[in-house]
Image 1: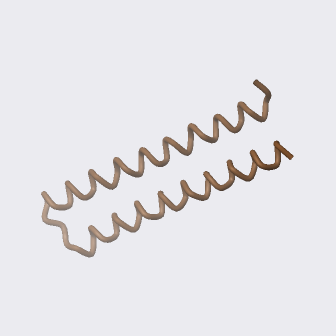
Image 2: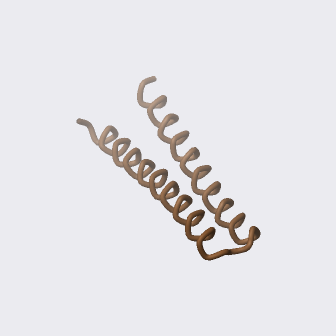
Image 3: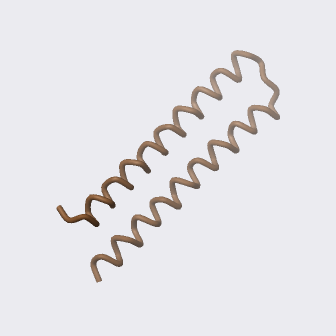
Length: 73
């Protein structure tokens, strides 16, 4: 495995952790917010934070894809 392949694999694992962490955060924030009776405004803030995490993951995926395209050609 070359150095670039190892770097791509590392970035892929990090992206997977971002996606999983964001998903767990979102589920817990929704559940805890409902149980604690938080206002819709605060719960919407948690939704926006989760959306930002998923958008960040999409940016990371795009970067990985572009790096692989550069390596192939």
